Length: 108
Image 1: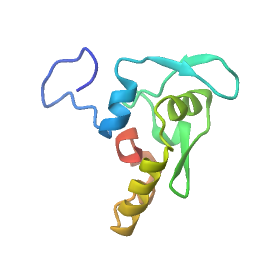
Image 2: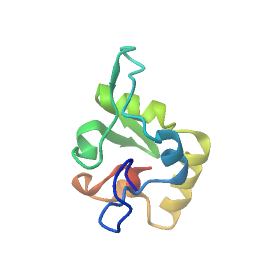
Image 3: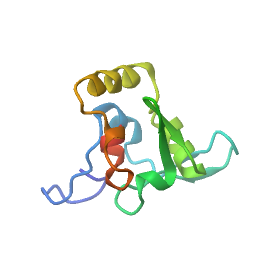
Image 4: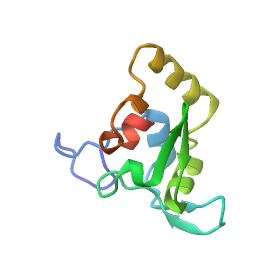
């Protein structure tokens, strides 16, 4: 469920458990390219494709928000890359979705 939101079925914030634990109530993170604190990606108000792209199984941040989010949530740690590779073998890797349909949950 989204931070501080009501615990109801209409308020899901789907993501992998590890990313969810890393995000917790975090609203900002440091962009590794500029060392500036920026807001992290908000799946409720922003489009995934505006901030990220795929490079194989890796998530690449395109904007300060994308880079800070990917770095602070560890979106390219080895275990996540292995999971994405397994998902691709099963035909379920999110990069097969149209970019406008991708969310951090499917990108996770």
